[in-house]
Picture 1: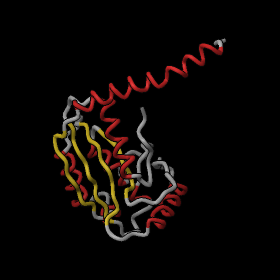
Picture 2: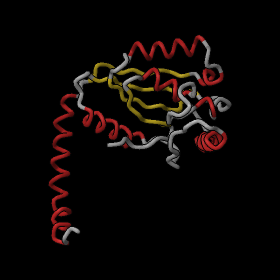
Picture 3: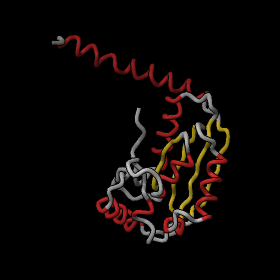
Picture 4: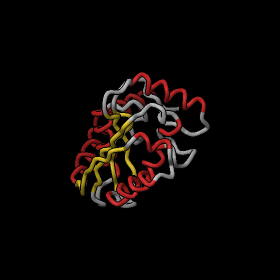
Length: 189
């Protein structure tokens, strides 16, 4: 059993350890060079037809912009005037009625639905649209938003291959804090 003094020493060292961790993250940010950024419009009608040519073209365009294994950070936004309470309620009902894995409900309203990172942006968008793996946590939009007439946009940035993972996580967390998405969770460290 640890002595009280050892416990106190551990806790008293936390500020120093946290500063060292932050310094490493700050140094790692120098490795995060943006290779490109882009916004993609997502017509809500795509949620009704997973085999449409328009969906295939969107996914191909995203895949061309962000090649596999590229480090990308992205957000999904609702475009235009939308009843965000209705979106939240539809998400909750869809999650309850489905056997798919849905993102976490943050219990707040925001035009930003999700913030995330991926090494395969094309696949990740497909999952968020609800046309990907059933047991991957995602928005699963086609399973709750198809009747809402939502139009979305996906803003994304691809970073250089040399970007350090901790630094990328710091950037994702900063974007998450800025955008305050309605769904998902702040990144895992």
